[in-house]
Image 1 (cartoon, one colour):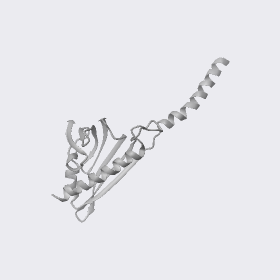
Image 2 (spheres, rainbow, N blue to C red):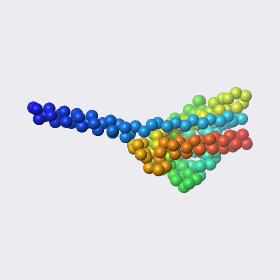
Image 3 (tube, helix red, strand yellow):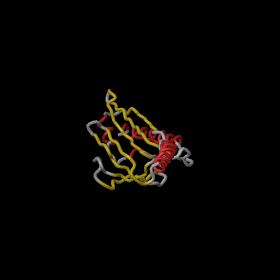
Image 4 (cartoon, rainbow, N blue to C red):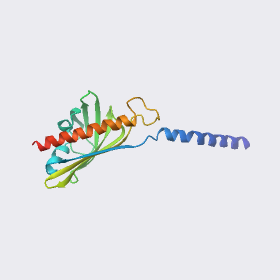
Length: 181
């Protein structure tokens, strides 16, 4: 009986010592970016472009091509395969599509993602006087979320800087495209 009790105490003690380290190892912070822009066009015109899940190459210079590989464009569950300008590929799944709210959300599901637990949302809102406000926001974790010492280029600052470069670039290009129609 004492032997079983001693083993139980030892197990509990070891579990108590190891558990906090295991929890810390997977507790990388959730990061967020949010960018917006006002476009001199009605929301419906902006949504026509932004709501095209397969149309990213039209207004995001870092994307070379896009093709729907599963499902139908503009329908929840469809999957697009993107080829980036640097030649890398990523697959993204449309997880929310609300044309009545002019909003869509997607996530990475394959290829070479730029982040882990990536959940971006794009929304078009009425800004008054025939203008629109487009908001592009995301929450995510760095790729090496399980370690306190991520490999070079996979730290929080690097992934934040990448999205903080790409999102404004895309929104500016979207603005030029829509306003130039």
